[in-house]
Image (cartoon, rainbow, N blue to C red; front, top):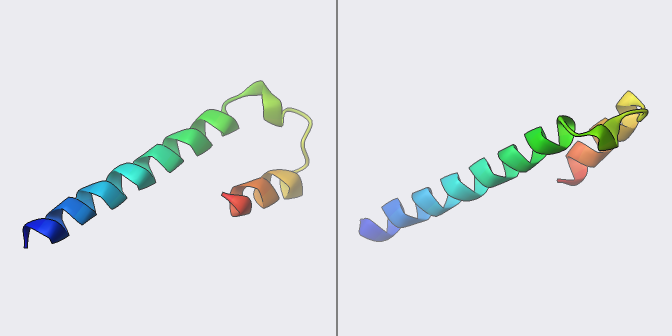
Length: 46
């Protein structure tokens, strides 16, 4: 059962890291001027 708990923690931390990267990207100047569809496409890539 310990392995399952470790895997859940690993998946949670990977998901949290990806979420934080997305939030950081959305908060950055690099998306200024992008169309909504471009932003959506980039989010789907991730």
